[in-house]
Length: 248
Image (tube, rainbow, N blue to C red; front, side):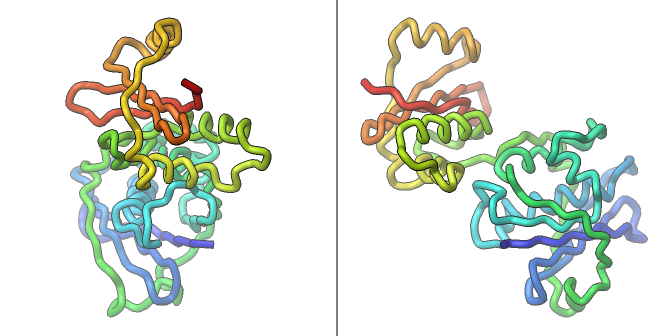
């Protein structure tokens, strides 16, 4: 189990929160989250920003997570668990935690009122120091950006769930880790086989009615007949909205 512990600490510096973190006795540090002005729930926001930064930008476990399975977050703020469960009433906070229901779906979360002085968080001479401007995290979305042969894409949870359902229809045994299987199909060497394709007019009409008339693309991997539907919008990465198998 890959475990990340976090504790937010209000500092004497105006609108700065120090989030102490640790993955074990030999790997720990402080992320200073800087806010331009005072706002409510700063410690909670700082803890969420730090967790996302450590997992996806710093990749403290050596890779970018594609699933919450095998991960445990030991957090100080109980509201984080509510966000992951979709039960939070703090609507202004929810966007900062959308990654918990996206690429970290299924992560175990324990609320533990740990202290930054606990031995787990190490001594000051071995801490890794980092700083983040909170304003850079203001326009958050559920998914992380993934580099694929089809360009940089945001991948929806729906696309992963459809992949799992369709793959299990084709296989006798359920896929043990559908998220990892899906991202391997999208980002590994096998993904370079994807090519743009056309659909029968009736099928395309249905998809246009469902997803709108934005620049809609369908790509197919001829080796597996896996299809993906991508929405393209001007000056923005594409959004992979669904996936399915279709024999041609």
